[in-house]
Length: 402
Image 1 (cartoon, rainbow, N blue to C red):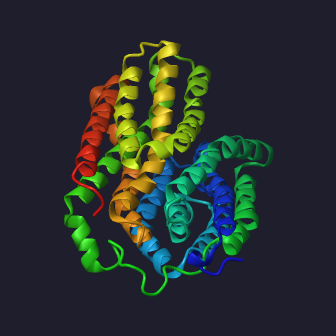
Image 2 (image 1 turned 135 degrees about the vertical axis):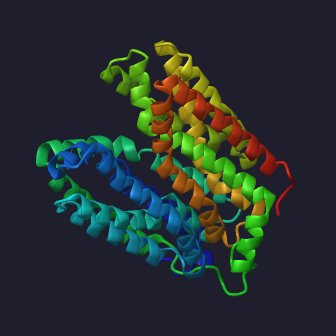
């Protein structure tokens, strides 16, 4: 059992990656993806409209964004073991509470708590944990971790659907709670670093209030945060509206679902390519390519005109871009400002990004209401993508590491 991040041998570090790979599948699958499967049944049983039901989930995303920075700083100081173990315990208890809700008020209260659990268990705290034990191989470790996490929807969408159809949504959620308790809690408790950065370690960019103030005034930081936030807003909007976009082009619901399902495997494929060629290009260069590809994919979709081949091309480019961007968001801050104090730095940058994840679907719905069609939504999101690419280029081309 590892006692301190810097004391882990190489095998111990990669065992931590393997453990986090399993827990990321479970945490993303049960906390992030599972809700979409049971959402309709939950709304029907609680007599809540779709906006009210979705609103509870968006509250969770907002809370996860608000806690990102303090959780990152805590992991820097205290290690990841207790924080992520507590997050998985909370996830299990709150999912169990979710299975017992009887009205919208309880639904919102439980999902606000689950947002806090997300902030303790998803990619941001996992990346901060890896930064405690990896130096030169941090990018490689993050890439391996995201390869595993990319299977969360592949595993948990059908699993949750099968549980819900067999047991009902309430018992299905109870099973998800039990999986968190049985799988994530022991893996986090046994394999994650128990201590934070050693005493006397070099100062991190976001260690204290003065450092955070300097970061917020740093033009590179603001450009980078703007780029990541815009990209996430567009991606989150697409995630909720993609099926409807495809149906507007004339695809049947079943055909649209099949085509949209290509995005997940393409995300994993993009990460595999990034892993294979990581030694040939910096994370900043990879980020420029991925952010440039994102609006290109949306333009392909906007003018697909119901062509299956064009939509497949969209799914390949779009999925690969977003798969790589998870790695870019995790590695570029360390590439510019250093690995020391990574948790606080990454958490500070993640806050607006995660808030944008909650706002994206509503932004797209507003454009749809004004324009009356999804082509305008797609073109607007493509414009956001172009602006994000420009902002990222401004950030990474302003000089080397801070």
